[in-house]
Image 1 (tube, chains in turn purple, yellow):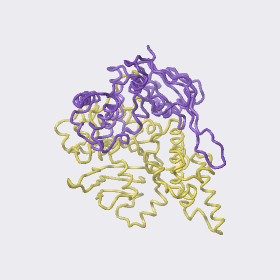
Image 2 (image 1 turned 135 degrees about the horizontal axis):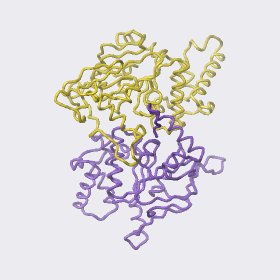
Image 3 (image 1 turned 120 degrees about the horizontal axis):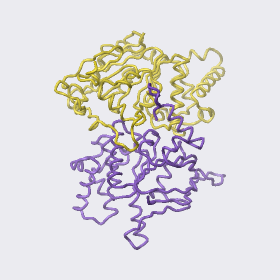
Amino acid sequence: MTTILSAKALTYVSEAPRRFGRRKHEAFKLGPFDLTIEKAETVAIIGGNRSGKSVLARLLCGAMQPTDGEIIFHQDAPHSSTAAKQQWQKQQVRMIFQRSSESLNPALTIGGILHEPLKLNTDLSYAQREEKIAAVLSQVGLLREHYFFYPHMLSDGQQQRVAMARALILNPSVIVADEPFAALDPSVRSQTVNLILQLQRDLGLSFVFISHNLGIVRHIADRMVVMNEGQIIEAGRTDTLFRWPKHEITQRLISAHQSLIPQASDGKRLK
Amino acid sequence: MALLDIKNLTLEIDTEAGWIKALDKANLMVKENEIQALVGESGSGKSLIVRAISGGLPQQMRITADRLTWRGKNLLAMNGEERREIMRRDIAVVFQDPIGTLDPTVSLGEQLEESVPYEFVGSGWFWQKRAVRRKIAIQLLHKVGIKDHVATMRAYPHQITTDIGQKFMIAMALVSQPALLIADDPTRGMEATTKTQILKLFKRLNQTKGLSILFVGHDLLAISSMADSMTVLYCGQTVESGPIQKLQKRPLHPYTKALMESAPSFRVDLAPKSPLVTLPGTIPTLQHLPIGCRLGPRCERAQKTCVQAPEIRKIHDHQYSCHFPLHSKAK
């Protein structure tokens, strides 16, 4: 497997607003830690509230600048200048935000929403963009007609698909998703899971996602990263971590999840 | 005896397209000392049932029911005062979005102390009463697992995290020592450890205090670990209800089966990364409800007769409404 994205000594420090008579102090510190993401693998980030999961996701996709350390993208850019390279790298890592319904602009049609990243990042003509949008809509299982719909006309699952389409439209190699399943209903959730699995199989995408739902993490993730208070406390293959969690916090998370799972009546333990 | 008994609850909303049945003959029964789960997707009318019980529905909705009773007393025939008395002492509701339901201008401690019923405070001078209120509030916070009561009681709703907010709302609901606690999606968006804490708290209250709980939500993993029985709702119709073991082992309605299968943790033999079983399509909007069995268009077992709403059938205490139930050949 080839490494596609790696972070070295990644650090992010946010400072609390200065108050009268007090010195500046750190409000939250992330890292420093190293992290690599391989091609076509799924990495799940789990951890409690305020453990820095969302910050890590935003750092990875370039929505926030790290205080120290660097994020290296291991694929050769088809550009020579540094600025063009950076621009290209940013396109390669795309994000799906936590609540898809709130991250879509209600004043634009789905077509308009999907035009925007193309307008900002590529030199395609209007006709080419239209073609691209039609292709990506069918890729995520929507219809061409949805081009003319406004976000409020779509159901939760369809909005999730639009968010996915917006992430996919620039042909990224890594998709970062912040709790993509949290707000979804069970049946829509399994549809989204299937969609992600299928896209990963077809396009060879790497997928980094944050989730509280350990059942789904176990199902789709290859590797797992457990975070607590801005630090990675444990990382490894999903089945290894589920069976032999080493760190106390991981053990607590896993056992909390396992305690919910019913014991099958025939004595076989569900995993 | 059943604490809460709902039979054929129909709720209609007036829209431009005429009266739409948001709830179509929904049934629900909560017995004493029981944890009953009400399961359904968003838009299936779970919260409408909760609001119908608590009397919080807007005037322009039309409610009709064969039975909507609390300990045998008809809730619909009551006047406002009687109903408020029941809501004040016997039924407690934890609504969705805990932080949104709290008053943003009043500190949490004040809100909790305010909700302590007069009967518990006793008589005395105002400072003595205030001390009793405060003591009750602190005890409650400890009971639901908030350790730092000083900071929490001083905080305003925007300053606390969602899980503290959720626990706080449960504390506020328990203050009147109700007989029934209705919790509307209490574990939404929680991480695993906090979720188990809340579920354990519910279980403990149920066992020690004999509190009945109506647990509304779609987290099947949480529900199956604590609930005694379950009612499944789809688009305002109750599709199946019964003891949770029976529903899990042998679901008769195709929708229940699809719900169960949507949680990967329930399946032992599921290979990692294999596609999950799903129903095609999504839940229909209220304007475009299908006639008859509302699952019809999404159901792979649907046949011509499914355009007529199926009657409720019973196998012991397992009720379902489907023309072509699963396992029907074995019967």
